[in-house]
Length: 71
Image 1 (cartoon, rainbow, N blue to C red):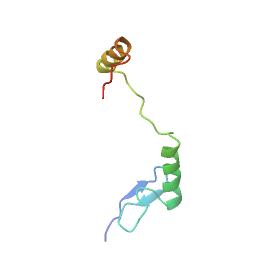
Image 2 (tube, rainbow, N blue to C red; image 1 turned 180 degrees about the horizontal axis):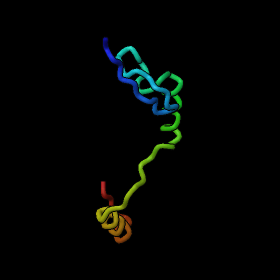
Image 3 (tube, rainbow, N blue to C red; image 1 turned 180 degrees about the vertical axis):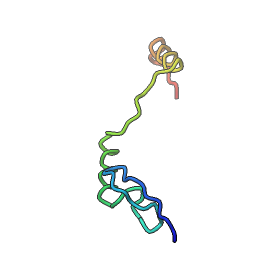
């Protein structure tokens, strides 16, 4: 007897099989997949930007040389 691995849908939490038969995996349905896509499109999911020393150096260079092209 084959045991199917169940995972929680990232959108609604419903347990769904992780198999090739589930074309919407890791989601439980196409609806949950579209809800997740909408969240990405609305930029609800984001990674906070962290500043680095390079950002500060580049920013200072832009202020010191406003007409210089860096491209």
